[in-house]
Image (cartoon, rainbow, N blue to C red; front, top):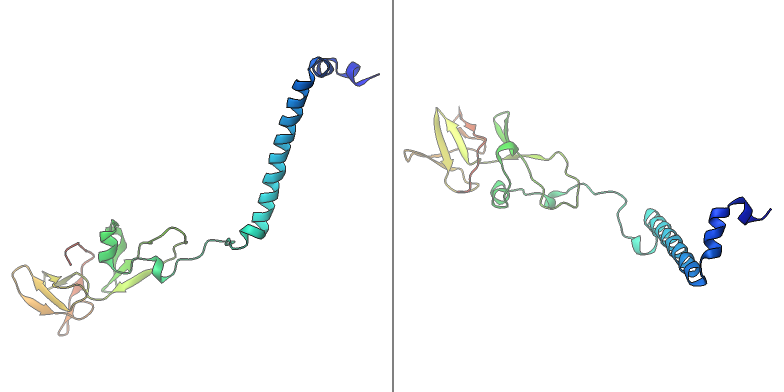
Length: 167
């Protein structure tokens, strides 16, 4: 029994194919086999960090200080919404810094903001006159000097979780 008698349909196709058609079939098979071998080779090189992949990191690094917007004003200018990023904890304004670039993994990063933009004292809202300044002014023009967390001469004011572009 020959191969053709076991599978007559397939044998008939190969026998009926001209030498050019057979050659193109063999070339196509060889091409796809080559693509498979090269894909496996480059995957192996990448997974083991060989040759050209030697400097590729094995994991994404955790974001460091320069990867964040430390200043709320700069984050606001870059288009970030600060409303969900500002919170009050223990009478201090806390700020979750947005990430500047995407080539790192963010971590929990809240920082305390000294001299917030708005302070509330005795029902009156005071706005910082200059960014990072202890000088605040109310809507009626009263100027006061608060400490870093909105306290004034022993009276406990409180920071407001609010920031705008006018600092």
